[in-house]
View 1 (cartoon, one colour):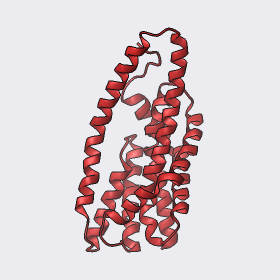
View 2 (cartoon, one colour; view 1 turned 30 degrees about the vertical axis):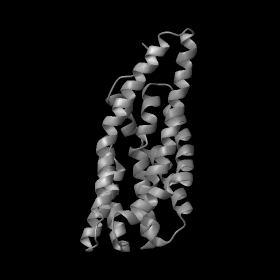
View 3 (spheres, rainbow, N blue to C red; view 1 turned 90 degrees about the horizontal axis):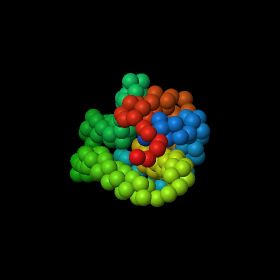
View 4 (cartoon, one colour; view 1 turned 45 degrees about the vertical axis):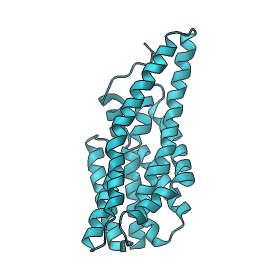
Length: 237
């Protein structure tokens, strides 16, 4: 059972790499600032760093905060497999989804199935973040774009600024990859904290599985994020 759980954790992490990492590489690759393979290698480095340095808090929330009592091993396995299968299907259809939603839903279902008390207050807080963040980031992106274009229209050396912005887009992708490792790795291996394995080893397992996911199956959702939502123009207006 322990071996099955570790494999299931790797499977969920692989799914996060195949689906969620499009958030990091979709924009730089879709705008043709960097090749897919080069961005994947850069992403793998920062995902592992984020996992090792900052994933422990999310692990604790996923492993202990959603249900009041620890899940038994069977419940952990069913929660992780349910989340993994859901994200695999979404990735196959090139649809970017939140693995966080999948794993939290799996844990809630597993907890209810074994008669465990679910911390619905914590689940509600997590759900509020899911609802609030997309419009907030859209508003922030809209505002920053107009601030930057206002500035760029009034400066000289357009070619220099265009090249600088290109590098900044790639750096921002690396930063998002670090954040992905810090946050979503906890989703993939958080339930495995019941095994008593060191969180550092779990973080390393999650970071590696994410990297393998994007290397082997990440191109499908990357195409949706990079090309299917909006068209990109590298030159500022």
